[in-house]
Length: 219
Image (cartoon, rainbow, N blue to C red):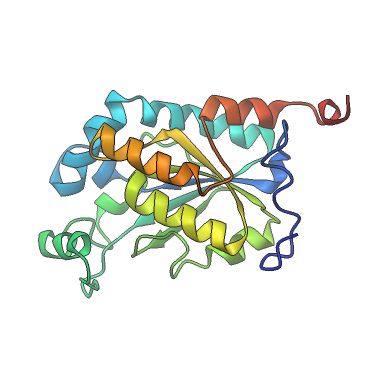
């Protein structure tokens, strides 16, 4: 039992089946200015997103996950004009005007299938939990397991996963739906998180567990 959440965690993520109503897919930074080429972030991430198949796998995941009853959360980043530039990444974003709040670049990418029941939140730092009330939304839906995907593996995905673990969530890293600027940076981040998160898995494996009949748990 997680004292932080008041939920029975560390029970479902290690089981053969996941209860879909307690699962949220957290998609980080699948935005126009990152998914499409052009600009600092698009030029870094558009090619690996398409070349690795990470974007296609994530796009395929969402409709099926919703059908099974999982919650989908789109987490975007936008940089306000008064961005805190206390690290090189934020400093560069501020100086280049990348992903500026209110521009089309911060909108969810056209390739991503959305639904009125989805949650869409914007943040301004490296964790999806900062200034978003993400915890409140998840608690309202009795979510206990987060399946995290997105860009980039070693920054916002890892930052979100670490904070989620500290709060008390079971965290599944969908490593086949994440990218970093290079394959080696992605692999290093996945290995770091393998020691931290509840499980490193894939989109097909997650769907198989969401779709498994409840009675399989006791047969």
